[in-house]
Structures are given as C-alpha cells and as structure tokens.
Image 1 (cartoon, rainbow, N blue to C red):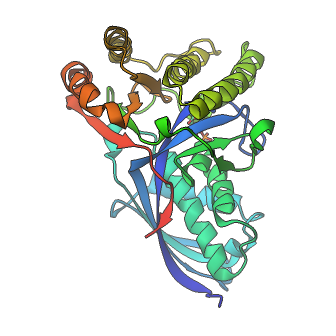
Image 2: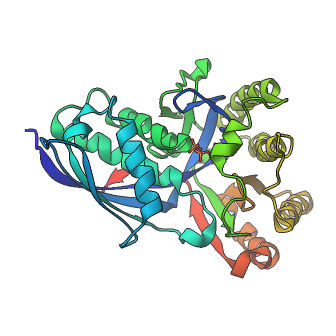
Length: 342
Ligand code: DP6
C-alpha cells in the first residue's frame, strides 16, 4: 500500500577511496573509475518527514545536530530543487530533515559522502513508500546520492564499491556497484584516521575537480586511474597486500600531485602529513608488516592495515603517530556494510 505521508530514518557511512575520483564532467559524472572501502563508524543518520500531494515543494525545516544550519540547509535545498526532473514527486512534497554525524564536525573529515549517501538512501525509500520506485533500491539510492556529491554514490553498499565506467566489471558512471569475489585477506580492514589538521580546506573539492578540466596531466591521470583500478582489483582478488598497498599509496600521492600541478597549484598536505607518511613507510620497511596510507582531499592520513595485524600495528600508531595529530585526535574505523534503515 502506498503512503503519501510518513517518516524515514536511515544511516549511511563515509567511505575512503583506494582509487581516487578526481575530475568530473556533465551532471556529476566522474572523469575516471574509482574504488572505495565503505566505513563503519563515521556515519550520518538522517530523519526525513514528508507529505506529498501539496501545491508546491516546501523544505520547511533542517536541523544539523539539533540546531539550524543555514549553509547546509541551502545546499540541500539546491540539491532537492535540482533533482525535480528525476524525482517529480518532490515538486509537490513538503519535507523536513534532521541529520547527525557520528564524527566530530571539526575533525576535517569529509562529511558530504555520508550526508548525501544518507539523503539519497532516504529518498529512495520514500519512492518505495510512494510506490514510484523503479528498479533496485540501492542502485537508485546511489544514483540520487551521486547527484549530491560524487563520492556519496559509493556509500550505499559495502564493504567495497566501484563507481564509474569500467567495462571489465560493468562499472557505471550513474551509480556505484558492490565489488564481489574479494579475497578473504581483505575481509577485515582497519582505517585509523589521523586528524592532523581540522581546519577548513583551503581549496574545496569542487574547485579541485574543476581544475582537472584543463590539467596538463589529465589524459595521463585517466589512464593511470583505469590501470590502477585493474591492478588493485587483481591484488584484492589475489589477497596480495603488497601489491594493493603500493597502488593505494601511489593513488594518494597522485591525487595530491594533481593539486600541486594544477593551475593555480596548491598544497593540502601539512608537515605532519609528510612526517606520518615517512613514519609509516619506515615502520613497514623495518617490520615488514602490511601497513599503508591513503589520503583524501586534505592533510589527514588514513592508516590502512588488516585487522588481524592490529595487535602489532596499534602500538606503533599510539607511540609514533598519535603525537603528530591535532590534540592527539584519531578515529578508529574499519570496513562496513553500507547504508541501512534505522
Ligand atoms: C578526493 O565527492 O567531495 O575524496 O562530487 O564535488 O561532491 P563532489 O566531490 P567529492 O570528491 C571527493 C574526492 C576525493 C576522492 C574520492 O573520494 O574518490
């Protein structure tokens, strides 16, 4: 039975890219395929109250962590009005939304992936309740999330997803798909996020993506990302942490190399980021333990290692990496399963 009014509460996690999405075209289509791990602890919960059959669209209230937030409200309002052609029912719907993040908002963690992941998932559920959902719910949710923030497309499923045209896996530009047949060695992965600088990004990701339009290394970067997608998938299917880790680190540094060589050029890494990278690489060389790093569009470093090695790697993080962090802040996360209804 369809319901023209109701409430839906969902949660969606953030994700960390192994192969980076950097550069986009058209209506939020990625310049290259990307692969990510869905997180478990860094999540957004989203409560949406809706009533259809109204004379016009109305976004009556938005609360972030229990308080009004004009900047977020205006971004969501723009997003919802921007998808009227895709969700025509929105044109006659009255909505109010409340969201909460599990991670501190001052931590410099990108929250758009979990925020739009949760909103896209909630909208897909509303379509189901209204009887207008066509096709698979998670596919629709990923599609809607992508239109809010590209990386959010990868926050619906887990533990690993692929987004972007990539023929060998039937990867699509419109939505992300879960990756199957990954080796048991990649079943449980830890991501310890070192919060090195919690400030606002100097250059937003939107500007960073646009600087790829005329980037001198654009063609080479597209080739590299396709090549790395192929090779990291082979490594993950073979259970090969060495091969996986070397691509992971190359991707992170390549993302930042793109920023350093764009016009204008810019640097988001801090001295602490470089110190953490060196500490991780030196520790790995000395101990031969499988511990690697990746980086998002900011200075924070994600320490990636198999959960089964936690006992050996956690003491190193506590003794050598924690002191580099702002106020010794770290987030202990791991791979998760994606979005769900509360
Ligand atoms: C560096 O998804 O934040 O994290 O589509 O403009 O919202 P928009 O960009 P966004 O880009 C994040 C890119 C990245 C790498 C990645 O997650 O693949």
